[in-house]
Length: 562
Image (cartoon, rainbow, N blue to C red; front, side, top):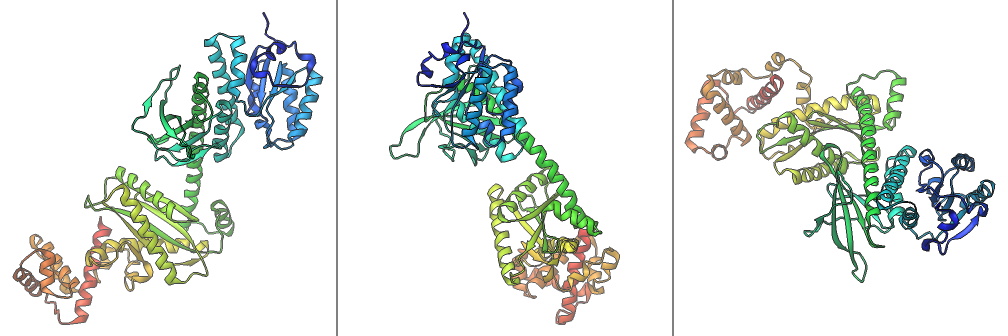
């Protein structure tokens, strides 16, 4: 026996529904029911369906688009339209009048139900009249799948897409929803959701009435209300890209949970997963494109005004602003040396995240084990103020990094301030040079704040950075020190370390012995040996300065030869 629109009106859920128009179509036979929450859903309609909509799919479309859409529906010969009228749709009253005109022209009854009713509540009794339980679930699975699939075709704004999927799901199941990442950070949610996630020790796994690749969990939670009302919270956990997990959380504060809710959530999670993959792919392409432009700027490979103009438009930065380049690197003190390449990438990600959290409006480029930052400088900011701010920022970055690994230390080299995008390559080279000196200064003086080095503070060492030949650099090492460097290998490193420490401690033998964990007489004996080998006059300040510079040059040569 056929199930018709007039039979549907006798269902309890439609006891308060209003027949707005299209009375001539009350004998239309109903062959299914579906939801319209994305305009593209029309491609999934077979004909004979009851269509449910709250105009969400048409909230911003023009009347011309609206007319074209309903002409496509007329060709599908739908049975009836059930509407819920909300206030968040442009020209809604005009669109309702258009639907009524459509209803009279094509004999399609239009019913209005209370806005508070969920789509699940409306669909369930209709599907029960048409199909047995198993087929009903299959049909509901299809209609939810079709709507979320159509949504993925309709929207391309990243945050907009995620929010619309959550909104549609909320209208289907009638309960607030929130999305969290693996760190339980709130990403998006619907009205009334709880914007924080606490996983109870009593949380338990449950199984939906179908096979799923996702993990379903449930726990009790207390709503943020004065009466402390408790309700069930449903969590769906799934793996996103690069082993990162996501949580979709439904707080069942407005009603009971059923199999149809599981079906809707399953399809919503699939849509979210696909959307996140799409967004990640787009971000990777955009980042690669931006990285290519940044690399050209850093290496000074952009020369023509047209190329500069194109580069700054893509990066979204002013052509003639003031800039400074900073290069950050992580040192793993626990390892004693730089980590293997795969671990460098891991720490590089930690460093990049910390930098992006602490800097505003910067352009960031990863380079193997370094993170390069192009920073726009305020013209009204004094140099002293900038230095204080930057040092404080590096300290905060350090604190963020050690939360992940206590052995990690942040190092930063800072280039000069330059005028215009064309000068960025000069600042980049200086930042790299100053970064190379951090390890050298750190070993020279344990009390020196080596976490950050400004190129402008390097004095005469700025000249040495321009020397690219180790042979030429060697000429800056005094002959006296060269004798020690050529001394027999077994004792050479011990004597060089002693000389370094002795000069760092202002030629104080007691402090030198303490730093080297040797007896005072041992330290004194070594200094005598050094004097005998090299002929250094430690009472001559000029000669001592030349030796100190020579020791730094020696380390520079070692860095270049690695």
